[in-house]
Length: 360
Image (cartoon, rainbow, N blue to C red):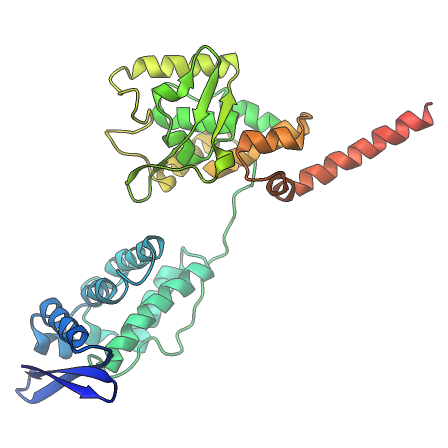
C-alpha cells in the first residue's frame, strides 16, 4: 500500500509492507517538489523491488541493488561518460561480491573485498570504486534496508601505477613502423597513428572517399564514436579538419589495404571489424603486445601521436607545421605540450649560434 502526504513544501511517499517476521513496516522517502514526482518515484521503487519484504530485509544482492540504484538515481542525472564509470563499478561488484546479499556485508567483509580490488588497481581507482559503492549503501542505510554502514572507515589502498613511456624515440619509432603488418586492420591503424599523428577517433573516421590518391592526402573531416557507437561525429575542433600529406610508402601500404577490403562502401569507415570499432583498450592491447614482441618500451596508442610530433620536431620541422599537422586549435597548445623538446632544441641552437660567432 502506498500513501502520499505533503510535508511543508515537499511531498513524501510511504510504502507499507510486512517484513519477514510478519511485522508491519513502512518505507518513506520525501523531498519531492510535486506529488506527481513522489508518485513516479514510488512506482519506480515498487517496480524495481517487486518483493519489498525481501528488499527491506537486505536479502537483495549488492550487485542487484547497485544496478537498480544507478538506473534510478544516476542514469538521467549524470553524463554518459560518468554513467559508464558507474557501469564499470557494477561489473567489478559482480566479480568481487558475486551474489552476496546486503545483510551479509559487514565492515570486515567489505574491507576484504575492497582489498581484493586494490590488488591490481591504483589508489585513485580504488578510491573512486569505494566512493560509488559507499554512496549507494548510504542510501540503503537511510532507507533502513541495512542497519549499519559497512563502508565506514574503510582503508583505501592500491598498487603503484607503472605509467607507460610518453613517446618512442626516433630509432624505436623506425623499428615499430618497419615491423607492422599493414594488411591487418589493428596494425594498419597503429601504422597510420605513427606516421600521421592522427587521433584514434580520426583514424576510425577515415573512409575510402577521404583518400585523395592523386594528391597523396587524407582528408580529416570527421571522427567515429567508438565509445557510444553513435556513428560519425565532428572533429575535436575546426583546426582538426585538415588535409594530411602522405609519403609514397604510406600511400602504397594504404592502397594495398583498401584493395584488400573492396566490399567496404566508400562512405563507411575503413577500419571497422565486423561492423564494430575496437575500443581504446583493445587497440592499446594490440599495440602493447606488438611493442613487447619487438623489445620496445610500452606506449599508449595516443603516445604514437606524441611520438610522431617528437620525431618531426627533433628532425627540424617547425612548431607551426607540427601544430597544423596534429590539428591543434592553436600553436600555443603544441608549444605547451612539447615544451621540453622545444627547450632542448633551443639549447642546441644556442650552442650552434655561439659556435658560429666564435668561428667568425
